[in-house]
Length: 248
Image (tube, rainbow, N blue to C red):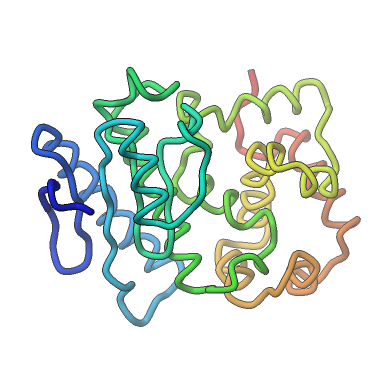
């Protein structure tokens, strides 16, 4: 399936790529290596993560083929132009940066790509720690990946900030139950829940929730407060100017 791909990497992380995309393979490897070190420290791993393989697909059709046949994930054909990465277990398929202009809605820059690699590797770590990842709180998956990767700090990174800034300005922050019921809202708001916990309870609490919680309700048991109390505090923090998120 990857017979026409070259390999760059070491015994822990490898990047597969087509010949003309070699410099992006090196960038992906370095980004994943740095992210792996930070994530290992964050989760306090005592053993190395299993071998991680990333593949840089040179176009949209090849990206879709690999997601379906390598990762065994069903997606629409052709996949949405906003989709440029997909993890599964210890494999990650990326749309290679040279294909962005023709095959995605995003513009490439090295920092954005490095943060994207960090984001996707966070999911790999989460699944490694919790094979039953569907039982982890809804805000942990995407929220933790956006928070730890630092994507939330950058206006040009896949649109993570704009919905939050608009909601803060207009005072239209949805309730947690509304967010949990709407996948698009999860992508927009989950990282603020994660950041709130990190800012007020410490990053170690996030690691504990990923490792120990069985669902969203159990997460609040670990936090030691009910959903309504947590939501009130989170909303006050989000709109009260103490969130560390720059408003327009």
